[in-house]
Amino acid sequence: MEDALVVGTGLIGTSAALALQARGVRVHLRDTDPVTARIAAALGAGTVEAAPETVDLAVVAVPPALMPHVLAGLQAEGVARHYTDVASVKAGPQQDIVDLACDTARYVGGHPMAGGERSGPLAARPDLFEGCNWVLTPTPDTETETLNTTFELVAMCGAVPVVMEAAAHDRAVGLVSHAPHVMASLVATLLDQAEERAVSLAGPGVRDLTRVAAADPSLWVDILSANALVVADLLDELSAGLGDAVAGLRAMAATDDDKRSSGVRTVESLLRRGQSGRARISGKRGTQPEQYETVTVAIGDQPGELARLFTNASRAGVNVEDVQLEHSAGQPTGLAHLSVTRDLVEVLAEALRNDGWRHHR
Image 1 (cartoon, one colour):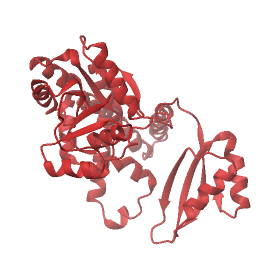
Image 2 (cartoon, helix red, strand yellow):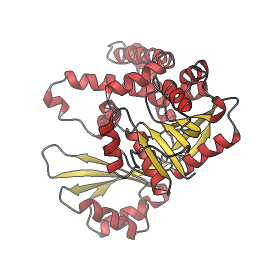
Image 3 (cartoon, rainbow, N blue to C red):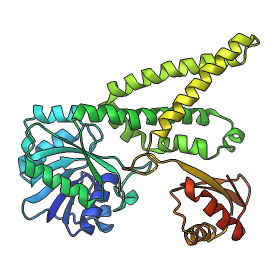
Image 4 (cartoon, helix red, strand yellow):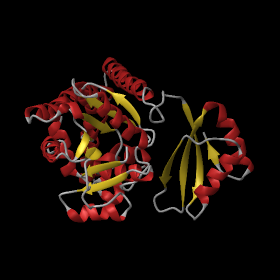
């Protein structure tokens, strides 16, 4: 690939453009908002000047509802030899593409499984897709050269290609992304209505649970509307489980021993099934789940403390797989929760003791 056109310079489009630029690809940028496109160009994502000739690949990075019409327009212009998109929903837009008589032989649907609660080009970075899954949903008549060009895009962005059928993709992302986003927002609405003193007690658990609720609502309305029935079905399943949880908790508060025991069994079963489901999620993107243990370290709120902690772990030959920070309200200290493989827990613990850190398992 020598040159590409990225249409839509938000978080995903600009990040893809930055990754391509870093690999020596000439990238041309286009956006309905010229200011956004110029910001992306100023960040090094490419140029806002029109390509002098047909480019190798056009990447359509616009909301799902707009993508089919944008693709149709680009193909009518003949801007590229091959086309892909990054829309987070595939089945509906793919049908719209067929209805609009687009050239499906030179198109591959795509969805990089990466992003964040921040949006826009200023949130973009060239390593956003590093190690993440990038789903590709070719049409029945997608040409091999088009598919290979899209594979090249995925490789240049450092992602892992996963080929799926469009409807299967939509069910999967509904399960792992769209329905959880709605649930995170529902939990966050409780915080919105709560007293300030209660919210001030929030720790890393509720922060992790509600993190995605900070994302742009208008963007998520577009995403959810394109996958509404799938998400509604999943929320129906969750509502049944939520009803069981409510009944179980009320039974746990009963004075009757049999009812209380029944409630305990119901809630414990829910928690165990949740634990089992959580264990199926990989700790690292693109890898199989692995069991980690957490070492918690008290850390001061002064410059260089976190760097010193990681340096001590590195000297001990310990790779920290993940880290979560918990700030103490009104205190100059916090907690760093370090996830490491089981065989390195004691190694890390001894190294931390020798370096004067206060820690516990």
